[in-house]
Image (cartoon, rainbow, N blue to C red; front, top):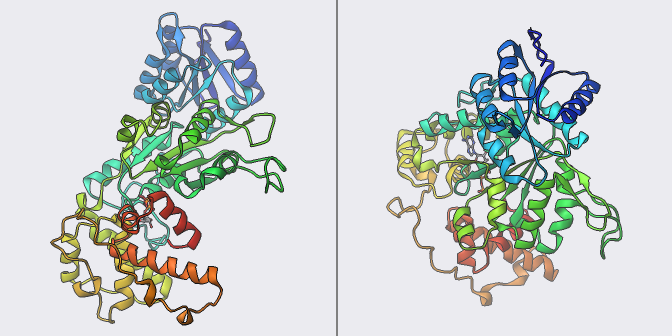
Length: 473
Ligand SMILES: Nc1ncnc2c1ncn2[C@@H]1O[C@H](COP(=O)(O)OP(=O)(O)OP(=O)(O)O)[C@@H](O)[C@H]1O
């Protein structure tokens, strides 16, 4: 053991009882310009940690005098500025997940793939040179003028969430974000990306419900030219597009079973095989996922794979619905109105007391997105003297939050006159009818997509697909 006391942030602690592995790691890290100290036991590792500061610790899982998990826990507690990664036996996913849960920022499996190791070390070094958190007040920053979407809110629930986010951002562990529609799940995912070591890499959001099942494999993993009819050129998949950054799998519950198997494999192996390719391509991507559905219940019903659930749900975050954090309403409303006023070059309207009172009693089934829609419409309708309760056009305030869907829309086909349409082409005309029907249903259901789909008699997945196709947000 090397006991030279020094406080440098350019050295790595390697803990492994196999000498060959220690030597290989020292050599590889040396080529990256890093110095390493080595320890073959927990005891030696603890002694080195007491006297030195490390930019990274790489530890094996099984050591003669204990488990690497113990070391992960100790380092997370006592030396929170040192990211620690676990070296796990190939295929031992339980150990990898266990390490991430204990606080390891990442893991690498044996035999160590040097490209993967280099990526891991680079992320660790970036973490060390980063301020711990940028978005910690929950107030709109004056400089941003409310234009850039930041996770606002000063309710205890949002303050707790931001504290957890700051910690989670520093890890590479998969995070599963649960919460109702429009509650801010994607914004949470972006915040994790922006505050972590991957901030300079891409953030690639993908709506799993919007990709037709037959195109999914090619969308996710890419394809080779000529691998199927219509594959006219090589195509990069979403995994490769997110290289060095974050892939956000929104509405992950919508993934068909065969795709769940392939996704699990890609996450475990950290590599993908484009359709029609002979070889796997290593990918360095952090996976964040979300759904408004109860994923655990879907696992129980056998509609979502347990092994994938276990793999993506290393850390679970719940974003509370707006009605559980009403303290945030005025702050959010204010930021939204500032953004709208700035975008339209109009003075910011006053939100009258009656309007604030009405919002405070409303249940917001569509959460923050619904608040944005309500205020946007009110802003368009309001006079110069500001927004009053009536301008908000809130539905019946006494209706319970999750009332039964209204009766089906009575769109009478015999009353539709194609001559009144702006187009005479049949496909465009049909699209116009489809768009109007969907927009009407969305408005009637306060932008709750689950209820809208039920009312229209189509699946949630089909609705998401149509919304994307028609460009309706
Ligand atoms: N805490 C917040 N502070 C500021 N803006 C927010 C907050 N939460 C949500 N928003 C805004 O509300 C809108 C909806 O948020 P987002 O798209 O992240 O929700 P979501 O939960 O991912 O929705 P869906 O379930 O439909 O995918 C976005 O415009 C987002 O910027």
